[in-house]
Length: 628
Ligand SMILES: *[C@@H]1O[C@H](CO)[C@@H](O)[C@H](O)[C@H]1NC(C)=O
Ligand SMILES: *[C@@H]1O[C@H](CO)[C@@H](O)[C@H](O)[C@H]1NC(C)=O
Ligand SMILES: *[C@@H]1O[C@H](CO)[C@@H](O)[C@H](O)[C@H]1NC(C)=O
Ligand SMILES: *[C@@H]1O[C@H](CO)[C@@H](O)[C@H](O)[C@H]1NC(C)=O
Ligand SMILES: *[C@@H]1O[C@H](CO)[C@@H](O)[C@H](O)[C@H]1NC(C)=O
Image 1 (cartoon, rainbow, N blue to C red):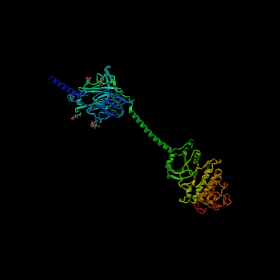
Image 2: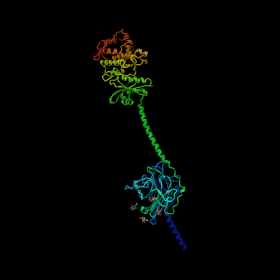
Image 3: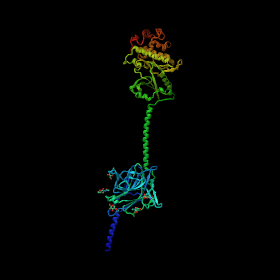
Image 4: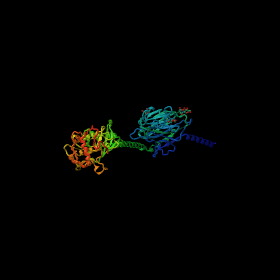
């Protein structure tokens, strides 16, 4: 009987023990190496040291850690619990930061809906516009948010379903030794002990530095009936939540003890806490990486800009030397010429001469110009060239092509002159598609060029030798006036001065025989003008290689020439204007050859007839202008 009683007693006490153990949850994590009973999400991870890292210093992170076994609620036995944990919130060096963390009691472990930035990874904005969650949380809040009546950015609060804390206090502890409150800096990076105790609808929160015992007075002591807080829940999970926003910090749990019956809480071994690593780590590197990447992108962008700049600079690059300063006014920028000629486009191509290509261009105010591009190597003679160009700018005569200025680049010289709408004379003389120039037109042209040459030889400040008189260098303006252009070979010397030997230049057929002596003079220009006159009147080129030998060279065919017998340009102008009697030209005149009897007759005709611009035609040669 006794044994049977004992048996019943033993069985029922076993049941009692079984029931009580079934309800009790009790665990201790001195470190988190063993984590099989833990549920982790978000950025939560266990570091090799056994440290539970909730967030690293990345922004907008969220972490949740829950003990997997829930606390079963029974109506017969009111809930009570005690917990003690050590945490550390470590900001980045030189930064204030972090959002904080919380001890959480919740019917669910699913916080995927929560927001990190504002609500510690616990709450989200519900349909009615207020942040909420079915939760009780003890927050260690390092952000001051006036919307939630936060008192400062270093406080502890008790949240029931809402971030609007029902109890709140600045992080501090009551020092039993000093008998006063001591504040705690949550973001000091140092380990902080936290105790949360609940019994008989009273929730106490205490905290203290690692070296301090649990204070005799709790920081917060709040009346809360958890049965009312979670009326529809039969079980509750306990754990932690943490988040970062734009402000960040490393947030760790170092050790954690929990039990559902007060008095049986296992104590933490504070001497064996896992080490908190100094704040450096991967996210700083990510920032650095981001900065490096940004820097790289910025450098690339800058590089492209510089490239474009250099390309443009190179495209429009010019060469300027100090001595050019005085000619500044005559200098065009390459860019303006480039734009005027639409990048030297084919559409504006006017022709190719011995010295370069000529393009038509339009400057501002629709001013039309001709731009000659000449290439040159080395700097030799450039200074002289430029100064002569500038001197030429000073030459003013209605039968000269007005030179406007120049531009200079590496290996390239550009001459800018006024655009002559009727092109060069040789086109009109030799191009069958152009209308034949009338005698009066030809005479006007000859007179004009004679006058221009006369001016160059005697009228200008210096003696200017053109040295390349020929029909292709005579341009025709809108009224078919001849304009002498292309001073590419011109030489300047003072009146009465000496023309330096410069080598035989000019165009074959126009070069006076004595130029073999290498000395150019006004006389050699006169010779060339004479050839040019023949060219205009005869309508054939000075040299026609396909013709029979004696006719090949126009001048040879006409006569030999003797320098002394040449008139001056002044005389030529007078002859052409009929103001001076023509010199005696007979078959016996020095220099005239026997082949030229026809032309001698013609010359005498010139002398006798009224050769003026108004005369409609003359009987020169066959009585009408001709083309070969
Ligand atoms: C907030 O959480 C609830 C579940 O608790 C979810 O139904 C709701 O969609 C969430 N709201 C937002 C804005 O995520
Ligand atoms: C909470 O603190 C009050 C006041 O110090 C104390 O009387 C009470 O026993 C505490 N309750 C728990 C569960 O620690
Ligand atoms: C210490 O802090 C507690 C909780 O914030 C507060 O109730 C108490 O008045 C403070 N005591 C002193 C001496 O400041
Ligand atoms: C807590 O709330 C429940 C449900 O409202 C109630 O039954 C219980 O008596 C309350 N406990 C205390 C201590 O007031
Ligand atoms: C609990 O359930 C009741 C009935 O289903 C519902 O009216 C109430 O809103 C629920 N309370 C909470 C906090 O979910």
